[in-house]
Image 1 (tube, rainbow, N blue to C red):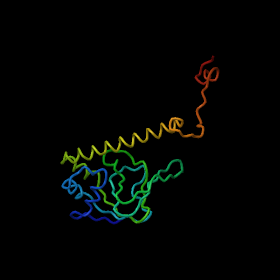
Image 2: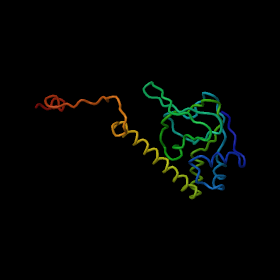
Image 3: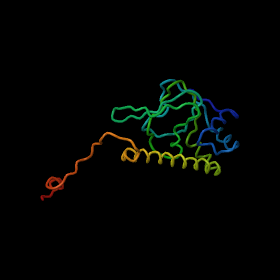
Length: 186
């Protein structure tokens, strides 16, 4: 990993074009850009490890990364992200372990801001805090809406016009079996 700072206006356009910072004016973006650093990562390098405490937000300046989730020995590729896309944003607002790993799919150049630097900035500048957190609320609301729709579509395929394979359901135990299971005789 190679790290360098951002100089002057370099990177501000990419930062301002990112959905999370799109409400910031030029001066606010410039203040934020001063906290970012540039990182270069090699093909296959792990940038975020699933299950670790997230410490930074990253914006992809060049290259691609893949987002993967591992569970019970199975690895699922969730997304491929490219220029202008960000990841690690939840680490700016919560003290939770990361839900997925992010790995360099190519050589990649990233703009990164550490959580503590971000917290210091929003503590000093309430206008930036308001704008960024407002965008966070919109994004989280949209993600929740999409998740709810997906769950509804999965549970009620006839409502969405889709057919799905029958799902396995837990058997309902009645009568003597239920009483025995509950430790009582019927």
